[in-house]
Image 1 (tube, rainbow, N blue to C red):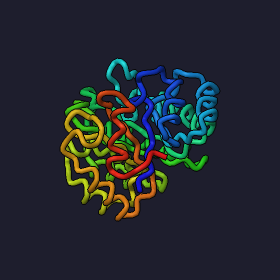
Image 2 (image 1 turned 45 degrees about the horizontal axis):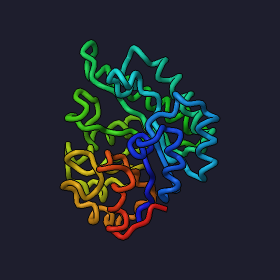
Image 3 (image 1 turned 60 degrees about the vertical axis):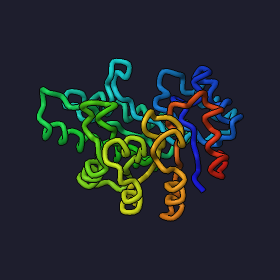
Image 4 (image 1 turned 30 degrees about the horizontal axis):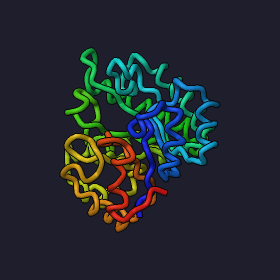
Length: 262
C-alpha cells in the first residue's frame, strides 16, 4: 500500500502555513512535504513538525524569485554562488528537521546562453549539491516539469533527468517523478515505473487535466498504485494537487480506493 504524504503548499491552504501541520495530522497524515520553508523561522517550523508528530519527507532547494516566475537557478551560469549558498541553507534546514531528501529545480532557458552552457553549469551545480548533501546522508532529487504549465523549463522528460543523473555520477541523485507533469509531457507512466524504479527517489501525484485529486481526470490511479506495489516502490507518494472543493473533501478518494493516510 502506498505511503502518502501531504504537500502543505498545495493542501490545507484554508489555513496559514504553520497551521497546516496540525490540519494534516488531524486529517490522518503522518508525513508531509512543502515547496519552501525559508520565509518562516527554522525553530518555528521545527516546533510545528514536532508538536504534531510528523515526518517531513521533502522540500526544495531555494529556487530564485518564485513570485516573479523563476523556477530554479541551478542552470543559470550567472548565479552559481547563489545556488551553492542555497544548497548550504537547505542542508541546514534538512538537518534540523530530519529531512532525508531535497529537490532541485533546474530553472528555465536563458536566451543569453546556449543550451550547452546551461547544461554544463547544471551538471556542475547538481554534482556540487549531491556532494554537500551526501556528507549528511541526504539524497538529492531532480524533477522534470511540463512545458505547458512552466514554459521554457529546462528539464521536461524522464530521459533528460536520467541523462543528467548519469553525467553527474553521484549515487545520491535521483529522479523526482511527478505523475501529473509526466502525464502531460510523455505519458507511458507504467513503463517508466517498471524500467526506472531504481532511479526514482520520490513520487508526487495529481490528476490531469486540472491538477486536482485522483479520480478527477484521465489517470488510472488505482492501477498505478497497484503497479507501485508490484514493482516494489518503498518511498512516499506525496499529494501535490489542487484540492476540489476543499482539502478534506478532496481526500475521499483515499478510502474509496481502499487506502489510509497514516
